[in-house]
Amino acid sequence: MALRRRRALLLLLRGCLIGAVNLKSSNRNPVVQEFESVELSCIITDSQTNDPRIEWKKIQDEQTTYVFFDNKIQVKPVPPVCRVPRAVPVGKAATLTCQEGEGYPRPHYSWYRNDVPLPTDSRANPRFRNSSFLFNPDTGTLVFSAIHKEDSGQYYCIASNDAGSARCEEQDMEVYDLNIGGIIGGVLVVLTVLALITVGICCAYRRGYFINSKQNGESYKNPGKPDGVNYIRTDDEGDFRHKSSFVI
Image 1 (cartoon, rainbow, N blue to C red):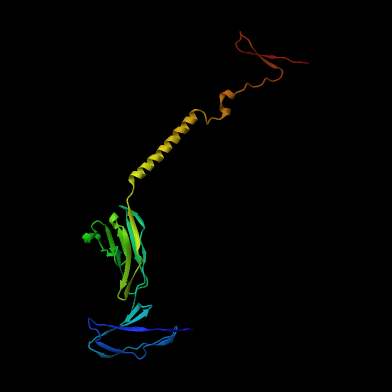
Image 2 (cartoon, rainbow, N blue to C red):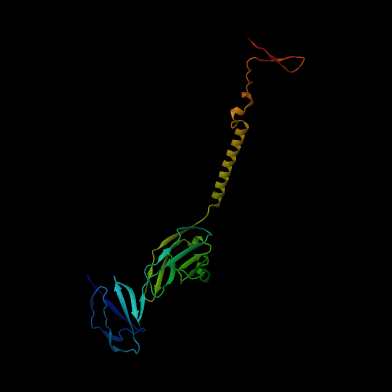
């Protein structure tokens, strides 16, 4: 199994004092097999503070991935997953979400529009008086109750905790006006076409285009006479008289 080298960077934070503590380590570059345990030492040789705070940080790809101090671990958030609607009509509601599941402690969220941080309530800031939204920094949810044209722009979210922060990519949200006149005109055109079709069908039906020729009275034919039977009409009787003749 390949060897993995782990490097730990020791950072001391104590108010505004820099270099107030002298440290040394028995092994600055430990080499250990993967999945095996390793011990990192940190010895304070001199301190000008009574209670110094020592933090271990893991640096990977020039980025801090987690912090360990006082038997507690802090994990830097990863880039959160942001969902921003691409287009929303004026006056409609819209919801933007930001979620991150790797950071510890649980991160807090911040939303930005065109690089400007958004407050938790648009009514609390005169700069956003033309907007109507509420933002929850604990859940990362940004809700517009009735969106305005001024809400168009590029949005992104930042998740942050004591170990660091991460942001998602910018996403555009467009706010457009509803063409009420065009919608009404389209509905009127459809209704007009349906009315013309109905009138055309009624006219065709009245002119007999949909009547079967077998039902037409002009196609009626007199039944044929059976052999040996004659029907003779007399003026006196006003009716038919039956006469039979036989041929031998």
